[in-house]
Image 1 (cartoon, rainbow, N blue to C red):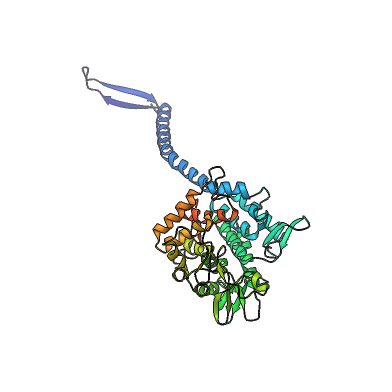
Image 2: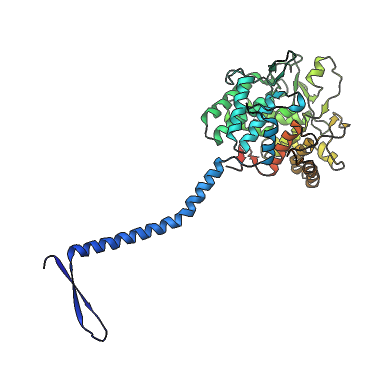
Length: 428
């Protein structure tokens, strides 16, 4: 029959007889199709079962990359110093705000992937320190309560260290968050700095001056701040703007740092002229006509050790600069804490420093091979943790927390810089 198929099967057993199973063709086709479909479904089910854990892991990993990273010190710092508008408030300094504080805060927010806080701080900075447009002007360095009771800019001069970190923050945030607007803003800021905060000193080289005005007391003399020039940040701008002045700034930085530290201790301020670099009193003191006042290494200079310590040793100039500054390492081989201030001869002016100083020298001491001294300094930091506030030091001062955040974040591997200053983060 045309619509039937015969299947002959030989059976073995007691009867040992053959039988013929006759079946309609359409039923046969349906049964074969069903068997095939069931096999495919079973195979796909097995594949899905194998892939589910992998997919779940990838989703979890991606979600972890997008989520804010837990960093207790940053959370406590944010609660204490960052208000809802995006302003970092220095409570120990009359509730003032500085462009430096805003730039540091943005860096720490980037380290933990806190996009909300980053954007708030950037917006406040632009609106209140830059007249609403950071592409048109560099931010004023100081904002607070004026004598007439109003809250406003107190000094419209920009601060090069803050501008440098702000440009860096935007460049790296643009790269890490894939936001081209932030990248372009970082480039604009760095370019504007190159026109207003860079000088070529005859006989010395290209340097970053602390601000557009107030640091050029005579035609042949400039006053510089060594802590305003973290080499890893300058290196990143060099890479991003290869046609700018940043290569020259980075190449000449070791000269500024080494000649400005004749006793092996970093100084707060140095003067540069055709004869080189030498320690100097501050611009304010010079403006008062007190040129003979001794130069000091103190609250500004402590950051020189910090920047060198957390930089990649292969960043140009870092190793040479470390070798030129052995004074602090030698001092801490025989003393428990860093000095609060030293003069340009290396003599201690004030011995007892706040806890932030110990945090700042921790990476530097490791870079100098002084592991025992480094541990002692971090032990001191850890011993000052206030369990009630989550901050460090007796008063939880703003500046101390910034120094501890840099040192602790680096120690815990939350961030690193490569030789070109490119930021490497735990969440990426």
